Image 1 (cartoon, rainbow, N blue to C red):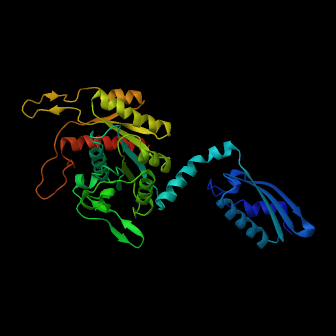
Image 2: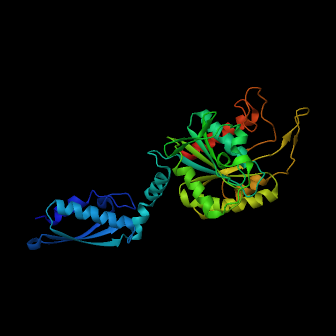
Image 3: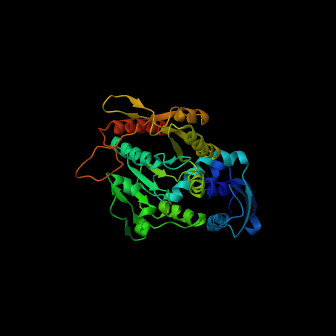
Length: 352
């Protein structure tokens, strides 16, 4: 018949279904009682969350182990582990949530690009930051999560559509960056009239049903403001970091602060602020004209207790005859060089 020590040894390697750590690590085997004459083993187990389907599966696993090793009957009682134990392993729970969402062995660094209002160049920042990270040697993907105002495919000059392999969607690759967008699934630029829950399902599909492969970075171009999609991202990706885009105008910065405060409230780290359309530089005189005012980026960074990652002027990309990508700045373009600096700062912060 099993001894108490043998029961503990048999159950210790089993993983808690919520904390994804062994019962030995969490101290999950609380009590063991043995009735030798009846070959009955009674065990009290502490886990991260009780009264769930996962608990039922764990119960079957534990009973199977003990019966296989000599017990005739098994009695199990479950209790929730102390809060301090659960909090200790919380980061691994968050990682596992994202691992389940993406389905791969390696999880990318998630970066959401947000703004308080539309028209500040959030999508432009997303695609050019992605390009700069790729040029540095990172494997990068973009989810165009701006469901109503999708623009990433047009900005990057994407003309093909995703392929389907088995049950997985293969994202379109452009300039070495993988892209998925609501724009791929809408005919003739039709208006989107879905409600919140339906949009949430589409966003989940972008993670679960797309074959992303091993990425270093996955950038999310969020809709402006703090609506359903932004809320879903905060819920789905606990470790997601954010970049807030604004113009120098005080009103734009004031509104962008709401998006930033939402990130802080949901414990998403803000990597910094990008001030777009910072100024216009005359080719004739070299003089800078601050078309939208000054100071918005610094003011926003101060409110959010972060730093300005870069100030981007108003300027068009170089024209290239054979390449259609109206919003992509070339590597040797002055703004392309600014994006390179921003990407380097992002990598330093994320991978430190």
